Length: 159
View (cartoon, rainbow, N blue to C red):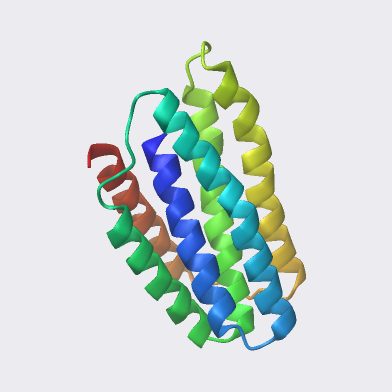
């Protein structure tokens, strides 16, 4: 759950930065809306961590800052690249949540009920970005994104 919470912290930073640098006001509005929707996920994961008697990651401030910087960089490439970054990010998050749901203990019914709608929100964000004209990111960029997500996962889990 701590990993999921850190992922939501990263999502906040990415969307906020991407909204800030988007050139088209409509694209900026889409990012701002997605950030607000992600706030629900952030609140839910924080609440669930408290219920489990666990804490958030100590590395969250670093991941927020790094994700904000990445969002700014994605936006420098223009709105199509910015949207492409969303498509790939949400695709990877959707995969993570699917894997997470497959490994859930059968006794955690609350998470089992909440995870599919969260995954559906992520898929919708990606589809909306695709429909708005996202460009496909090059394979090396997608691989770097995956490696960064893996590092975030390991860091959040341990710290």
